[in-house]
Amino acid sequence: MAESSNDSTVVSIGAAIAPAASSELKVQDVEIDRIDCGGRKITHIYASRPGQYAIYKAAKSDVLVHFSDDPDPALAQRDKIAPLGPARAELNSCLRTVEY
Image 1 (cartoon, rainbow, N blue to C red):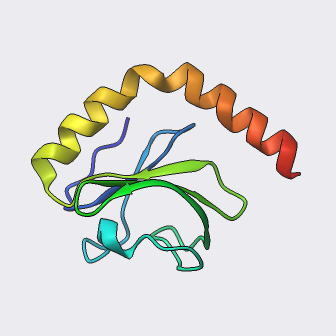
Image 2: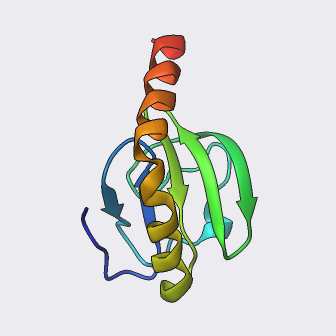
């Protein structure tokens, strides 16, 4: 799993953690039709709590998590989500089947 030194991190639910392109992207910036740090258009927001996290879907992408803007809670969030790997992969497989 890749680690990020940036304040904000996005992880694909079905893949390894990808560092944000810029620490300027904040949880509050995750909005439908905006471009995320990976250059993908955000199409759905499933859950969001300002400053803490956002769970969203981007065009032709897996479900993604934008972790806390604060590095300490973000690290704890990454640790908590790691055991969900097999279920996340299955979910993303189902989503790909429906979309494509």
